[in-house]
Amino acid sequence: MSKVLGRKIITEEGTVFPERGYTVFRIGLTKETIRSLKKLAKEQEMNPIFNQEVAQSSILVPTKNDRKRLMSSVLSPTFINTNTALRLMWKELEVTARLHNRGWHPFKLVVLRSMKGCLKQATHNDGTDQQSAIGGIIIAVQDKTFFQVNETLLELRAGEAVAFHGTTPHGGAAYAKDNVRYHCFMARTIEDIPSDEVGKYERVCDACNRGFDSYKQKKEHSCSAKKQDPEKKEKRRQLNLANKRNQRKREEEEREREENKRNRRKKRKARK
Image (cartoon, one colour):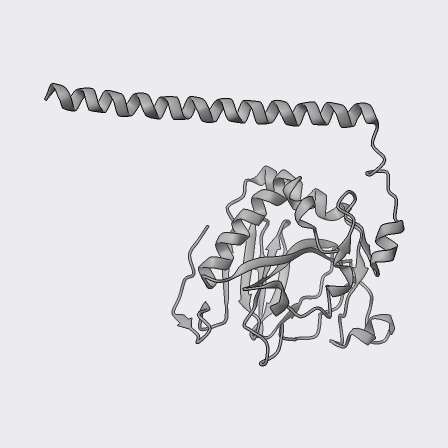
């Protein structure tokens, strides 16, 4: 994970950013993990978000929104923790958030998709002057991922990311080819984050990660992921128990090795 480079500006709320208001860096993930993240991103269900006009009401108006800029439901903590690639990326995002503000954490990880021919998104800021300071991160999982920030068009390669302050003018770029990428907010608490884009998709199924407009819809929802074979459930339970036993065994062996090291050091000191 790279550090924040360039001449830094430390604001009153403690955020650290270069003068230009954004930082480009390479995220500490292997190529295999990046490929897994790309594959997972393409499997997510998507909903159109604002594009040519910022107003949320413009989403359903063809002249104001080409409906080619899409976003997934918010990926739930359960979904992230059960997926190795997502879990590794989340750890990197935690470090990135703290590099820019010691009190910041990542929130509301989503997949963004731009379909072939997607137009440029309207330039906007995240949050308002009345809200606490927040930031955002775009994580590229494929080459030729573009992002417009502070009147500069950035081109990211797979495995690169851009972190930006919420007050820095930014927007999605136009795309000639289909593209998927990840986005998350950085903030002290989830209450600091504006909910106009993603608030609607907070209610997600932990099994299949589908988002719902209401808790009633989520409760009535049934999916194949929930209807698991009892045999498979039992095998998974036994596997989890075996993993826990192995973990405890490794920890005990590690403690025993450390104890032996300490004893050897004591004996060497006693001989002297």
